[in-house]
Image (cartoon, rainbow, N blue to C red; front, side, top):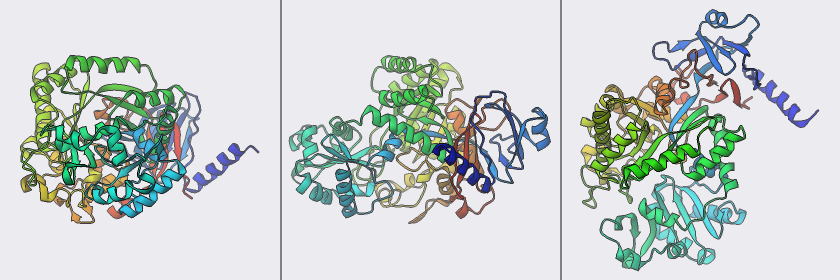
Length: 574
């Protein structure tokens, strides 16, 4: 017996012991199946629950009782008893960097593994020896917790001597905005004492400065971008491997679609390869990055060219553009745009666009049928982004395009009702809504109390009828939907509870990760819920996620993930 066939039979027997029969991935477009004796959450607010679903090929034909599902198919349709297990629509992540997340899976990434500089030093030595962290002659370590940026003296002591005296080292922050470079890399990037002295007052905060006005290696946003210009990119083969790893990993978490928030050419090239080889088994909506400070006509023309260059690929679309309104709020970065100054500097962060120019950009993009997806973290960034969307709605009428603000870490309460009024989506990473060092120690002492109390205002958005979509920003944080919903419902962390009044019930979060995220991708007519005519994307999980105690909820495991009627993931749980 061939090894692959033996493995398939063993897997089928394992799945049978957990009460889940694998759905065969064949090419029969007329193949009919009824899955019954299930607890089904449909994602359809008017009909949220069912007990059976009928599928023909890659489409859903009926959802309801077993008799209703059976009536919609032929008498010889296959019947699959789910033995009371729960079936949900496939999850959709409305703000993720999937290919970059895949890079973290195949390279030297310390996310969730690191608590001290000594541990980092040991990890770096292993990454150098194995080659997993090497890019040319540079040692690259990813996923550094933000707390490490207060330890620049220790980083300089360990990574500028001995084996690293002449070798460039780059430590990438887990937030995607920050990083640290040793002396060898700073010299290569041209970041010297003289360079720091030449910077304007507006430019200097992007660089960490130590004793005697020397750069201490830390950099954020524009400063980090300058370092990145001399950091070797991974190879084309590695980026494809990363994309493949991301697809498999996300399917194992029940994620069947996502919005990739920065669609650069390398990322899109990886998606194109996977699509052309039948390996892109998820629906990907990728956003073209534009610079709001440049001419909007030229920026949108470049985005439209990117759409044309990557058109016609199965499971890949480029429905809009991505814009940065600001940076991040935690010390020492403090680049998020606030309406009140940071307590330690007297400065209010950086708004990365001129409001009038941004309004013109949104209006032009909306007229061209492009979704505008904006990183807006501080309350001023949120306010000005909503102002830009309001200008587009006034100029063009309501196009129905799901313009989106992602992160919304801090919002002015007067702006919260505007999300519903403008039809703007809030793509929230509520895994971050936890009382931990990043949200307390690195933030609370440094911003005005009246701003801090509106951190991750999820329940206020929900109560004001805003559409909340679920998002992870992976690899910044885990893409595990169950972990994120647990945090949204409890807001618990190692330092207590982060404003219990902003807790969101889990059923609302299930809508956030299904039909609401489908809206953020502008694909709500084809995915995001279980309804006749929609694509058969669904998952089967090991417990009733609507009724289990909250502490058990986060332990939920995906048993099976199905996309377009074909199984793309099977659990190996006994």
